[in-house]
Amino acid sequence: MKTWLTRLALLCFLSGQLAAAGKPNLIFILSDDLAQGDLGCYGQKLIATSHLDRMAREGTRYTQGYCGTSVCAPSRTSLMTGLHMGHSPIRANREVQPEGQKPLPAGTVTVAQILKSAGYATACVGKWGMGMFDTTGSPLKHGFDHFFGYNCQRHAHSYFPKYLYRDDQRFDLPGNDGNTKAEGKGATYAQNLIADETLKFVRANREKPFFLYYSITLPHGTFQIDDQGIYRDKPWTEVQKNYAAMVTRLDADVGRLLALLKELNLDDKTLVMLAGDNGSSFDPQSPQGKLFEQASNGLRGFKRGLYEGALRQAALARWPGTVPAGRVSHEPWAFWDFLPTATELAGAKLPAGFKPDGLSLVSFLKGGAAPARDYFYWELHEGASLQAARFGDWKAVKNGLSAKTELYDLKTDAGEKTDLAATKPELVAKAEGIFKSARTEHPDWPLRDRPPGKGKAKK
Ligand SMILES: [Ca+2]
Image (cartoon, helix red, strand yellow):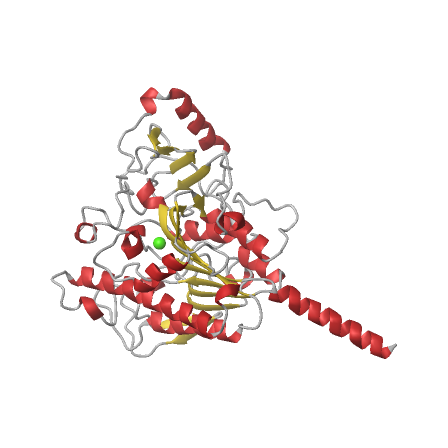
């Protein structure tokens, strides 16, 4: 009897191991403000990104991967929650003093929580921005076993911060000035610790399925770097040199992570996705925008707007043997698809009563067509409330409560130059129907016009 029980226990243990062994590791690398056109594989000529270009060749590159919206906190909330901005609990950056952002509410379903419940080891390394540790928004209360880096977005403006966090414990970085101006300097460039921590996490969890949310802060301003490297002698401004060096450092650190996956023989068990959290931070007319002219990739607009240049991401996926190599896809998808995708890959179940806005991309990632859907929806409340929707190839943008709805045909006009609203009243009516039905009212995010003297007009 005892022998049988022992055998049964062993069988259960082995089948558990097998079930876990069948689950892929998931790494989502989210860069802060990396623009599509910053990368060589999207056409950039001046900034070296050899590792990401290789990642694109070894996997799939997406030209119409959309962020949640075009600033940090709400875009990340969409990635974590599977919700678009019509349902997101966070729909703008809202600062909390002395440190942190408006927290995710208690009870918010997150992708990390779902993966943790499916047996994944989970970590967020880099920047959080959705609530301090003593609030309902702590990453440690939303499915992450481990946190390392900056909690607060403002804190992350210094690359030589006076301290960082390991889980919820603050530790000092002696010799750093914490200055968030360009001249900031110090003994420890925070990204070096953050990159090392990602490698440590992967090594420590190589034997079990893991989810690493690598929320890398580069190349967001303030533009600080410890070494300008190959750009030192370029005839550029210091900001331009620093920006290029930050993108190249991001590239090198992703390269180190990919090399580790290979070394640990995890390549074919690991889906690595990479995206920027919003479009280019540069006005095309700024010195950076002009020099790195590919940054907006011919698209209109940039960060804090809802035109395509603000929403389309540098977006790559790599999983040798599963995600086709060398594929370039022009089909649209969005951040709110990640939660259902990860749920399916992990063989997990959505919590009862929870319905994400996103759709699983598993078949699409493997080379199939993108899932069909009625529309994509975005909003943003920095100044005036902006709304945008895409249905088929039609894109509608409304830059404020009283603004007229603009309409563009992305098939022939990806640069959103010709407003067709006057000639297509039926499509404008359809867009305005989406603007109403796609969103739930939320006391923190009423639709409004630009408060007098506040915010910038969108270009
Ligand atoms: Ca950002």
